[in-house]
Image 1 (tube, helix red, strand yellow):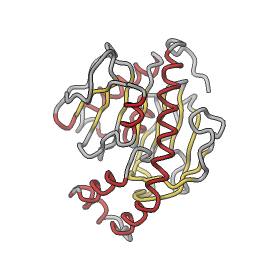
Image 2 (cartoon, one colour):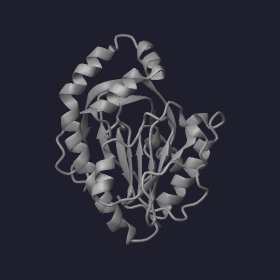
Image 3 (cartoon, one colour):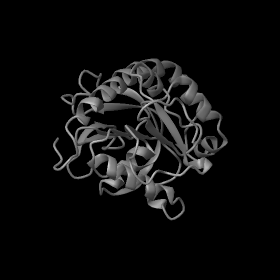
Image 4 (cartoon, one colour):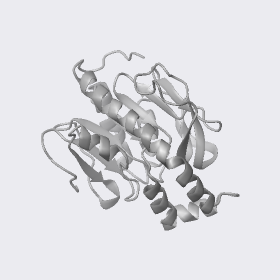
Length: 254
């Protein structure tokens, strides 16, 4: 596993492709003195069987679907780890595929959506009273790159939605957050995705989708999204430390 920094009880960051990194979350980690290490499943890194020595879990995006565990056996191992973490009140953050894996780990259905949502589209806050969503602008422009969606797990609190996808994010328990859209991206990250051959082929397969339009909108909307992500991720880390004091989840509370 490739280490970012190591100290006592690190967080584990699971990556499925190299270019889907933690992005703006890194700054929040650094300010909070949070130590983390990567498990790069695309390099063959093993997903831990248990939570021993871990303080939190971040699961990033990727091109595969939750329902493709026969082709990607590590997805099953990830859902097992997420399930353990959720019921032990360990903080969990899932982005894009990561959010779908959280939904699947908590018993919800994950499936292909009506069409791919790639680029900049508005997201509406539907739970403004939530500690992390409180005070966020609604709607705000977010970056999307997905074709799958999920049903909400039992007990989940919906947080965000878009015009095309009703479920863009949810909270489960006190410390599990799932975001379908990419709150973590910076302008440089978007450019690296557009330069990736696989991403380019995916864009080319979507009628009317223009990489240059995405670039222009990135310059317009990325700075504000970075400010929003900073607020959200900082709150997430602060709340995660508080939630850990309550112990394992027995009954899910909204």
